[in-house]
Length: 207
Ligand code: SF4
Image (tube, rainbow, N blue to C red; front, side, top):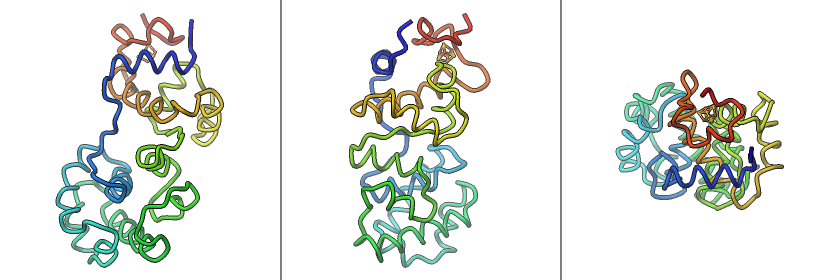
């Protein structure tokens, strides 16, 4: 069995022609805010409200000056809307005050923003700045565990382990495609091993 990440990536790249993310965005600011809003909800729900949100608040300056109750009203359907509204306004204020209204390009600076953890920061660093990142979310964790690429349950440990075995130049695409694979075939409850393109190399294939 060939479980080298590059081999896995080549199989998944054939299956999923377009490895881009699921959130709609036009610039780094929109991606950052959308990623914060996507916590505990689906990307589809964020996409449903993001047009309206960014029509009202197109940049950090506008969002930094927003009335929280108006932001809450717009993002209500994404859940945890009070905390999220508070976070994205605080995030925008920090961008204005500390980063010249730009989205910073380092992990350290990104995780200093309200509502931004390592996973969200990695999404921004990979998608916007082309940096090598391993993005550990629930799908990534599950698929990598089933493939035997990690035995850890700690997201930070998984990130470190996968960074050691996935070449830098493919880390972002690998993260995105493994994530997609977790949504399409390798689902939590019923993995579709029979049709999975990785079935011939996966140690957990239930065939
Ligand atoms: S063969 Fe099954 S367990 Fe393995 S990656 Fe595919 S869906 Fe997941």
